[in-house]
Image (cartoon, rainbow, N blue to C red; front, side, top):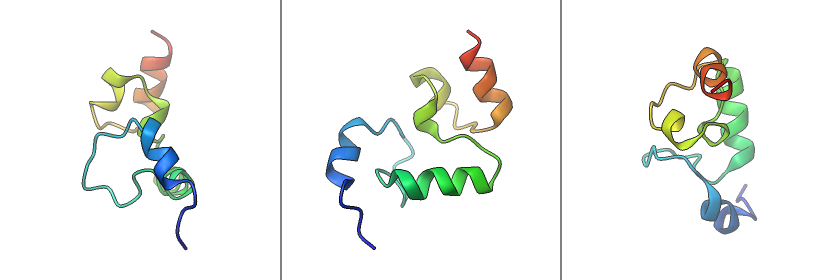
Length: 65
């Protein structure tokens, strides 16, 4: 199923992992990361997203700053 909001989502998507097939497809991205016990990159500040460490522990570290 095509994402109706893909173009709009890509305008603000912070993910820098370019080969990602879920880039701009927020619903798919959130589901994927939650299944892995992770937090999507768009929840992180830029310096946290750049680490590619999507762990909950890493997210908490950046949120507490």
